[in-house]
Image (cartoon, rainbow, N blue to C red; front, side, top):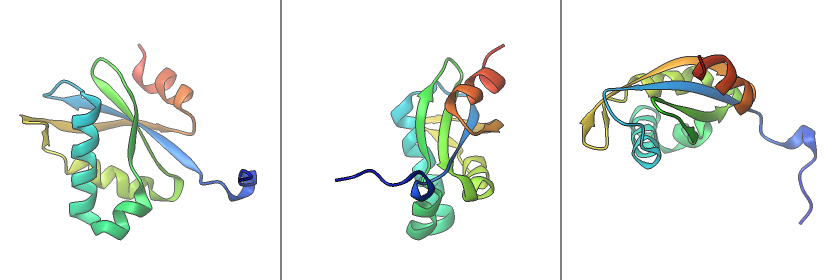
Length: 109
C-alpha cells in the first residue's frame, strides 16, 4: 500500500487543554472527550472532528483535531464536566499546527 500524497493527507491542529479538578489520565480524558463530542454532534459530527488525546502532561493534555473542526472541538471540550469519576473542566489554552509548537508555546513555563 502506497502512502497518500501530501496534498491528500488530513490536516491537523493541536489544542493545548488544561485539565482542572482531576488528574489528566490519558484514557479517562480520551473517553470524556469522545463522550462529549458524540453527545453534542452525534456520530457523524464526532467522526468529522476526530478528537484524539496525543500527549499528557502534569496538568494538561494535547488533543489532535481536524483543521476545519477546531471551533466545534472547542465547543465539545467545554461540555466536559466529568473525567473518570471526578468532576473536572477542560480549558483550551491555545491552538497550534504541530505538537512541538503546542507544547512549547502553551504548556511549558
